[in-house]
Image 1: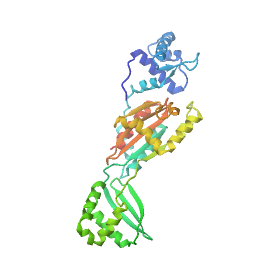
Image 2: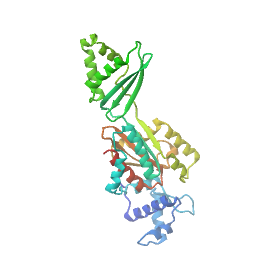
Image 3: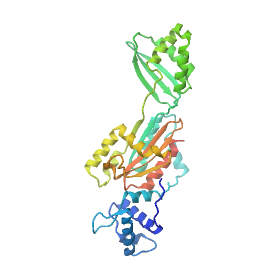
Image 4: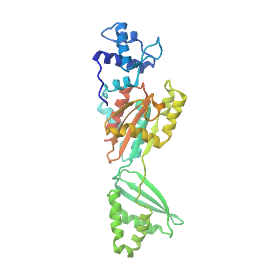
Length: 342
């Protein structure tokens, strides 16, 4: 999170009180309300003077002449920079970790992450599973579908299953495919896909491969993409209904654009890339998403990039209104990040 801007301790305390009150009520905050909430009493007049300074400094705005003040995006960002994740008990952390137990694929863990974050925060959650560049080959399966068509099944050690159907000019029997499968699994299992391709190319380049029927068949299947896995990131979202249930004080047009964004994989990836990619694996909090689209200026994103045990990356985030409960969401993202990377 960003370093806190320079602001006096008293002004910061009053600003944070205003932010907390606005998060709780969604209504402009009056000086009298702030004065009553302090342990060390200040007069409403003194609080009004501080609030006037905060308006001049861009932390507050006054929607109506006679109304109280409303925090700006700058105020929320300053407030967020003062927060630290709440601790979690060992039992709670273990409970979250059990949600990711087993040999689930990167995509499956990302989808589960979405479900857990939504349950913990009651906000919309996003997760993007980014395939590792060094996926390890577990095994292949080859199945004849008849009429020259063959189903390639490539299983990697993260338990992800990649399927492809290809058509051959000449028929191939299931016995042929079983022989090729056994050869590949015996010689290439346990290698990264890149290593497996290089090793297979070396074997197929050997002169003896020209005279071996099995290797000739294998060469054909390899040229058709037997070990090619060119899948892009998989994106998951959950919790859109929570946005509809909130009093967002936003227009139908802005909500419509938000939901259109969430329906398009590339736009969601751009959202995560824009606000998380430059932040390494640290927690990122971005208040106001104007950079993606003006209609998203009233929303905030809290997320992180997580490296899975198998080396693949997953970007996780919670998207909510600017007046979300930041402390709760920050803690949830931190705890889930710790659990999913274990």
